[in-house]
Length: 180
View 1 (tube, helix red, strand yellow):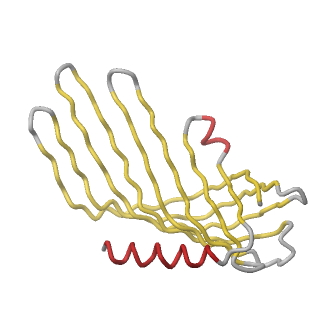
View 2 (view 1 turned 60 degrees about the horizontal axis):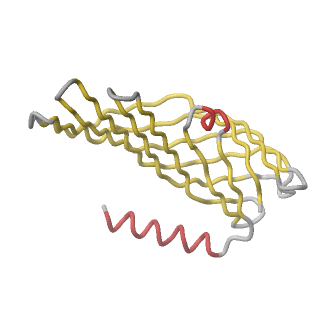
View 3 (view 1 turned 180 degrees about the vertical axis):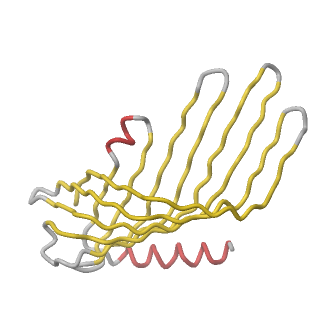
């Protein structure tokens, strides 16, 4: 699996090296609650963009619970109108996510991890101003699978399970950004 990830990373970096323009986009609603959810898209040609996606969230409830979410992936976006100002777009993305929980109850501390993989397809409308400002809204559908559930507590109890739990649902996208 590590060889596949390495080969994919090399291919993505090689593709990004020939890119002409770059756009950075983030979800403003996510930023309001402390979640960074963004993408860095590189134009390959007049209609196709590719790049990495990142989501990170760390929520601490003081002395009791702490939640951390990290999602890394890649995105391919196609915009059929070559004027690159505004128009419809379709995109596909693949990701690998990890969700960690630390829970404290008196002298007992437990840590748990859940890892997932997923695919998402979205479509919508994208506006790019002459100054480089980007506004995008879209919707689609995502599918995924929970791959591993792991946990360990300070009393040496351990929980490990390999699972294949499929999930899916609607995906909504609203981002603001800037194109360089």
